[in-house]
Length: 112
Image (cartoon, rainbow, N blue to C red; front, top):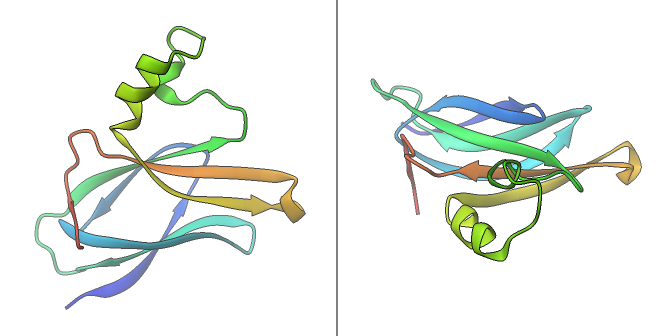
C-alpha cells in the first residue's frame, strides 16, 4: 500500500532510498528545511537509490564543473540525465535552491 513520505534534502548531492515505484509530489521549504514529498511503497523489499542534486542560483551544475565554462553541447548531454523537480525560496527569497533528480542509472521507476 502506497503512502506519502517526506525526505529532507541538503545542498549538493543527496542519495535517498525509495521504493522502486514512486511519484514525486512536491519540493518546498518547511520550517527552514528543503523537503521533498513522494508517494512510495514503504513495504518494497528492495528499494532503489534515487539521487537528487540541489544547486544555488548561479552555481555550476555537476556536469559543467569539469571544464569551468558553459558549453551548449555539454548542456544538451547533461540535461538528458537531469530531471527538474522544483525551485524553493528561503529567507523571503534571498536564498534560492533548485532541485534536480539525476536519472543516470536510476534505481527506481516513476509512477505515471
